[in-house]
Amino acid sequence: MPQWRADLRLGTRIAVMRAGGLALALRGDPVARLMHKPWRLDPYPTYARLRAAAAETGGVARSRTGINAVATHEACTAVLRDRRFGVRLADGRMPFDPTDDASSASGPDPTDPGTALIEPIDLSLLALDAPDHTRLRRLAQPTFAPKRLAQYRETARAVTGRLLDDAASRGTFDLTTDLAAPLPISVIAELLAIPDVDTPRFARWGRALGAALDGVRSVRHAHALSRATADLRALFADLVERRRADPGDDVISQLVAALDDDTLTLDELVSLAQLLLVAGFETTTNLVGNAVRALQATGTWDDLAADPGLAAGAVEETLRFDPPVQLTARFAHEDVEIGGRRLRRDSGVLVLLASAGRDPAAHPDPDRFDPRREQTTTHLAFSGGAHYCLGAALARMEGEVALEMLAERMPRLRPAGRIEPRVATVLRGPIHFPVRAD
Image (cartoon, rainbow, N blue to C red; front, side, top):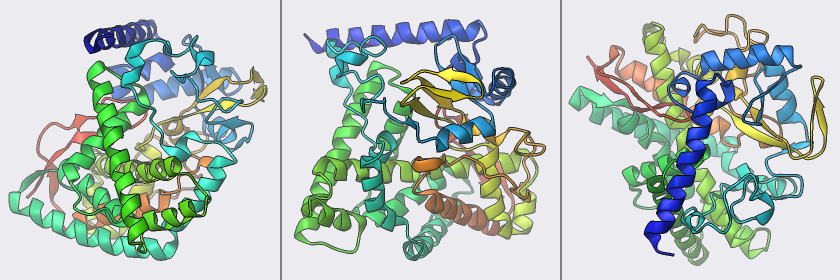
């Protein structure tokens, strides 16, 4: 079939799905509203509504979309820690896999040539359950050892200093594109020993893959996603061969050793490296943007400027108050009862991490941003259970360095124009954030 026809079929299917979801959102369905403008630009009122609904249904809110959602801190924690839930279906299949006939009733038609545009988004650990998840996580764990994190902190400070010098020379700059994105990209590039990093190109890859967490939005996005996935796989396949010929002390070299020992496959290695790259900078980019936005909006930036030592508290409060990753999903591997509601095997559950951070039962006065808050209850910004984020300490460190050095170098930092938000459901943060260092 000609490409134009495949594009047309894919575009039609996406439009029909979006129209159906929007119709439910307009009728007041809270889960559908999380997927559509204008509600997802500020999802917190919707989260509050879902928490109220969950209180009446034992912790689980069921949408007319057929999706279950948990919104309270207690219910979210329970699902994340319950080994009867996983990120795949009970038999190991990916949910809504377009290449699988068994899932075609609820996912894309596997005979539709339009699906050929969408290469599988394999982010390794995010899409695996035990035992494969356990095996790969063990291989990646040394990457985030305390000794290595100390080295990365030195890199983060050096990179942040250079970026802030460049920004100060201009006066007005974009917090996202001039600091929050290039900082973690540079750190991850060193972690993976990627030579000649093209920061704008890596940022484009991250945006395409990050947006795909919400599903493919358009034919154009499908093509961009396909190109990004192919480019990343080519990059890491080349790095594998280089490290095999000339190994070093970097993460890729360590994984190549495991590859040669038959501990993992080449596809697993490439996918794991891809996850470390994309997840490693998308989370931090949004964290820094959300933190500065909250500090400026609540009048607490001056507190940080007066005491840059508050940076660690500001990072932790941002992770609770407005986290970069808003939700995740789990699937029941057997019939499960949560708070009196029975979920059948393979039922999907949205775990609303950001809603848990605003739950008054877990966090007193949760809608108030306070960088001096004593965190008496653990937030869920980095998920929980077996899939707790491996890079949590790295993201925290990068956010702390960025905020501390911003406050030291630019204590009078102020917004200099309209913030352009990311229009997404899973990831939350500013795409463009103009600021001025007076």
